[in-house]
Amino acid sequence: WMARYLEGFVFCFVMKTAVYLLVLCFLGSCFAAHLQSSGLGWQGTWSENKRSFGGNMYICVDIENNVAYGSYSGAGLFSGVLKGTEFTGEWFEAGYDRPFGPFSLTLSGTSFSGSWSYYNNTSADSTETFAWSGSRSSSSRPSVEQCLVPAQGVAVTGTYENVENICYRPADRYQNTNLPGVFGGFESFGFVGGYTPDAGRSVFMSDFVYRNDDSISLRPETSASVFGPCSSNSDCNGPNTGDDSERVQTQKIVIGALVDDATFCGFFWEGFYNDQISDGAICFSRTGTISPDSVSCGGEAVIAANRRQDIGNTELLLSEIQRVLDAITMPSVVIVPGPFDGDDDNYGTGFFDQFLDDDDEGSDDIVVDDNDDNN
Image (cartoon, rainbow, N blue to C red; front, side):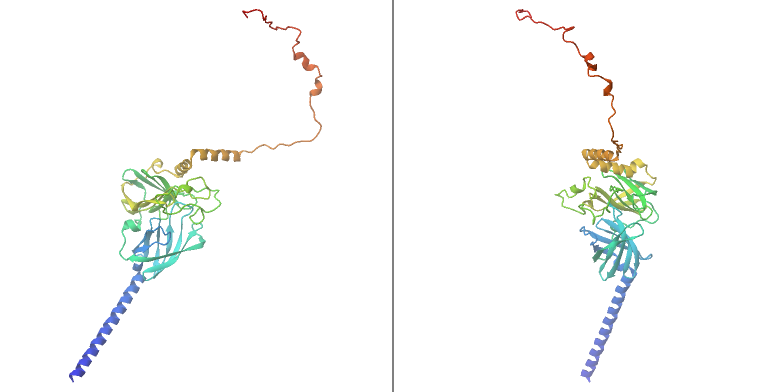
């Protein structure tokens, strides 16, 4: 009977263990499914495969409102709505023609995949789409400086560190974006301008100048510009600096947001995303909330003038001369065939003799005596 008792005991123990493991697996699966359905599965640090600049992508989730905010490689920001495993919204960059558009991503475990595209304008999607995927390396919530979550209900207008100035101008539509304009003047960096999609909370600025006669959309995929980080020992942005209508001639980019009532953080780039200043966002404390004057923030005219100066005085002069020549309208000349009607017949062949001197009269010729040694 002892053997039968032991067999029964072992059988019960194994069954209980199996039940416990089954329950744990079930609870674990439910918890994982809950994380994904609640949106927390999106939060964390991810690989960045949108622009593939080599940096990380950070996502911060707002569970109460089912929304998320993030940044990727310091190149752009994105935000949108979470619904189950779906994440849909808009992304924003700077430095070229209408640098924004929609995206749609789907989460599967610790990876996601989906697509993004450009807006042809602020309401119509581009017909061309691009793949976007990534995998998560950490589920910890990133810092506010990494996600650049904009503060609610606060515009970026003001003075920072007593020398940096940002102006939000909702009445101005920035270039051809049809979005409110924002301009900034940063000490030792220069003037930049751009747009804001959320009433001045996040800003996307550069010294890019849109020209109305551009025949193509000047974007990374459609221009000959050198786009993205490059080796420090090569002048990768050199080809972008000339007055080439097929290149994006951007030299400065700022991607930023007011992360709280008193702090602005942004990613600063030189060139067309060629060289990032600092490894992460640079933050400034706000020292004044009054809107700075236009001289401190600059404007489209200031940025355009600076960019035209950058292409060189000789090239600028030739460009202006050509522009003036192209604008000149010459009067038309009409030749009417017929007999020549001149007035030569009024003068005889000897008419002009009266104006000629007679060599024999009034001659004042000087005679030199060869024998006169004093002459």
